[in-house]
Length: 114
Length: 118
Image (cartoon, rainbow over all chains, first blue to last red):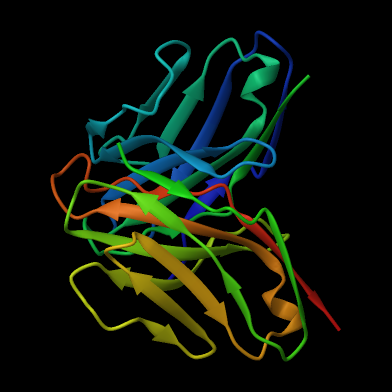
C-alpha cells in the first residue's frame, strides 16, 4: 500500500511564476491536509480538504494561494505569482477520517523561489 | 486558539542513555489528542507516539514513552536506550477532538533538535 505521494520533491521558481504542488493521498483516504514548514520552524496548518470540498482554509494566505481536491486525481496546492517568502517545504498529509485517525505525511515538496 | 510550546530548541544525549523532551500546550478544551512526530534529515514526518487526553495512562511505544500531565498541560517524551537513529527533529503536536473543522488540523510546536552522541 503506497504511502502519501507528493510531487515534485523539489521545485524551483522565479519570482512571479506559478507553483503547482501535487499530493496523492494513501489509498482509501479521503481527507487531505496541507502544511507549510518555513526554515527552522515547525509545520503550520494551511488547509483541510475532503473530496471536492474545502473544509477549513483558515491557515491559507488570503491571496495567491488556492487548493483543490477533485473527485478524480491528486490534491493540488497552487501558488500564483510566487515571492521569495514562499520558499519553504510544503507537506501533504492524508487520513481515513478525523479525530484520532492518524495523519500520514508525504515526503514534502521543497519550493525555492529565486 | 491552541498553542504548543517546545522550550528546548536543542538537546543531546549519549548513546544508550535516556533523554526527555519537553512540551507544553494551551487549550480550553477537555478532549483532544497529543502527538510526537520525528523528522529525520530526510524530512519525512514520522509519528512516534500518540496520547488521547481522556486516557489517564501514559502511552508507550517500545523505547518511547510520554509523561502526560493534563492539569499542567504538559506532554513530555522520554526516549530510553537512545540510538544513533533517534537523532532527528522532534515535534509535539495537538489536535482537537471536536468539530469537523477545528477537530482536524494539527498544531505543531517549533521542534527540538535531538543529537545522539556515540
